[in-house]
Image (cartoon, rainbow, N blue to C red):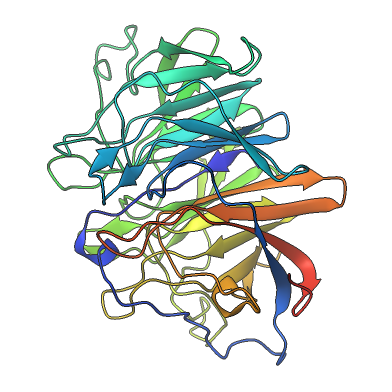
Length: 372
């Protein structure tokens, strides 16, 4: 797993208190696949809009917002999936923030952009080195979007609700929104060697903020998010080999419930502030904010890129004996343990005040009630 997208939506669609499990009757089987296990709680205070990355088999989760204390957070925690334990590492050195992005490349983790008190947007970026001391260390790197060799694109690009991913050992950040309320579709590559940002072909389809990304094999899939106050329904595939010739984006079947011929097909409803992870050759999409009348979701879907098709899986909100809560703005990641590779989801929220600190593990090959 080399990407993360986890944000708390400050637009109206992300602040609803209505909760729905969104369990559409679209599966061909009466028993949905997949099994959920409740793991050890995230040890930081409850939060939404946190951010994370994975380095050397460990997940790092930090920052975010706690509404009860009205605090923009900067603590960072390392999760060991094999031991099911959390360990606090060196705090993020920038201002506390929510709706930031994170990625990892070449054994280093990065956190940047986001928003804090005032919701004005940020452009600063920081690099985390887990090998520097027992708790790791941070250093500031180039602000997002800054390239002193390019007079057109030079300068900061403060924003929040952006997306980030790493594919084929190349890291990218783009889209999002800022204080103007408008969304972006630009894409930038971080040149780790030279510590600069390079403008790349813009994301296909809609402008968007609070979108989801799935890195599956050599491709990246970007969908959902908010565009002009509405949930974007298009799904775009990114091929990093097309970056240099400008042909990097290909539209896939949008999340409209229909294929390109208008036939009804099983698909998740498009959403913002959702959570994804990748296990094997499949991407998984769960949670998030749906259209304004449908509230917050807990449904789980598998995406098969070889067929451009979706299959519904078991929702952790219908898990027994322990029931999970539907949410948005959670953190998702995948880790390999001695017993297999699993997806994980932690933190998140459902309203302007409710935040979570629970952690759940998803086994795509399991069948409920194999849970515990």
